[in-house]
Structures are given as structure tokens and as C-alpha cells.
Image 1 (cartoon, rainbow, N blue to C red):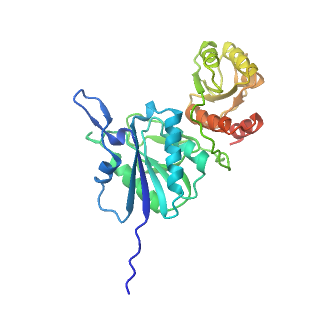
Image 2 (cartoon, rainbow, N blue to C red):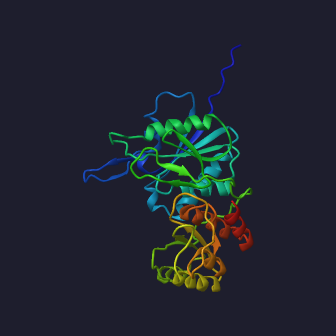
Image 3 (cartoon, helix red, strand yellow):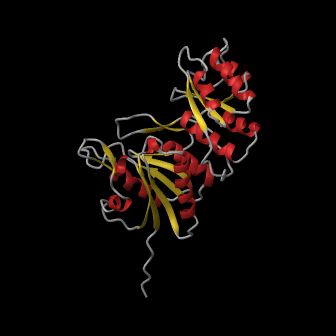
Length: 311
């Protein structure tokens, strides 16, 4: 008797983004294709595909509640023992953030692969279907954890950042040794306010003070260089810390390990003395997600500092 092997089952979660976009009459691109539409553009594959429509939004407009919805959907799919893995179709503007949240909340034992596109479905250089095929292939190769498959490359999510706006090869990952928390942080981050405040030469504390006034539980400073700013911003960090707000210092520089070594009143060393945590690796977007996840789970500040400063 011939036994017919079952096809591997892969869930495909559609959230919008450029991969699902086409241009309207006014020339602007916006999500218009469903996950089922995109799967219909693939060549024949020996896989059982389970599409799920979650959102139809550009990722630049996603809230923490939206990211939580995506993470919850991933968790629900992972509960199916028949599942070989998951592909998440997502906009590139915030892909590194949502992907990290999924990793932090689930630490998946199966492959969860995020992908998307830099060029809309009707663009001459449309890259979405090639990226979708790549992501499916990476799922079928097995493994564990969340990765991003994009532009013929595959990346881990810890330290991932988008580095190009106009290239199909859009992502890079900061060279690193650590991989972040080794236990899940399952509590939802929806409803938690964690802000990013950008520093610039001569910046004062106005924006950081505004975050304090708005009720932020945590603040990430997108600082200069290895994590530096001005004496005025350091003073604002001290005001935030006096109110019990956790402050993490990251950098606008995309590559390199960060260290709080500079003084002068506004350097990283001064920020640390004012009570800030200096991120060793994560850039502002991912630092915000990690901080939100740890705050939502009630992790003590010593643990938060250890994760940011040692991995």
C-alpha cells in the first residue's frame, strides 16, 4: 500500500505593508492585497498554506496594541502541533520591532519568519513574492525562533535594523554575541506608554519632559555617537528617574557596540550617573520594544539593566 505523506502545514499571517500594496489613482501606495491574493501569486508549492488576515496597515502606523495582536496570533498558531512554522507578512518600517516582540513573548520552538517588500506589488522592481517564497523556504528548513528573511538573506531578530529605504536588500543586524532574554516575557504590552526621544547637538530636555508629562512608563533616548547628548538632557533624565521612569540610552548610529565612557556633562557616563541604562547593542526601535516587554512583565530594574548592558 502506498502511503501518501502529508504536506507540511505553514500558517501565513497577513498584516499589510508594502508587500500587500499597490498604487491608487492618486499615485500613493497602500495595502490592497489580502494574504490569499499574495499566496495566489506564488508558483506551485508542496506545502499546505493556512492564510490568516490580521491587519491591512502600513507598519509605520502600528501601535503597541497592533503589534500585540500580531504576537497573540502567532502564539495561537504555534499551539497547533501540526504546524511546521509561520510566515508573517509585515511592513518593513516596523518589522524589527514586531519581530522582536514575538521572539520575547514566545521564544518559539518552531520557525517564525517575517518578510515583506520594499517595492509595491505593481512596481517594476516588485520584490514581495520573491521574499514570500524565500520565507516559506526558510520555514521548511526548520529551526527555532524568529528570523527575518528578506532580499536573499536571513537574519536573527536581536540587533536587527532596517538600513536602506530604496534597496531590496533592506536589513542588517548589528554584530553581537548575546541573544537577549532566555525566558519568555508573555504579558501584553498594549496600553503601555514607552517613548523614544531623539537627541541632537544642543538638544535640551523639552521633549523628554513632555514624555514625563504624558505619563510614559519608560523612555528611550536616541542619542548621538556611543550614547551621548547634552547636560540639559542629562538633567531631564534625572527628573524622569526621580519620578520612577526607566530611561534607556541608545544611539542613532546604526552599527557598533555602545559604551557609556564620555563625560563633559552630557556624555554617556553622565547619563549613567543620572540613572539611565545604557543599551549595549539594541537601537532605539528595538530598545523600546524590549523595555516595554520587561516593564509589562514587572521585571526589576536590575534585570532590565543587565539585559540591556550585557547582551
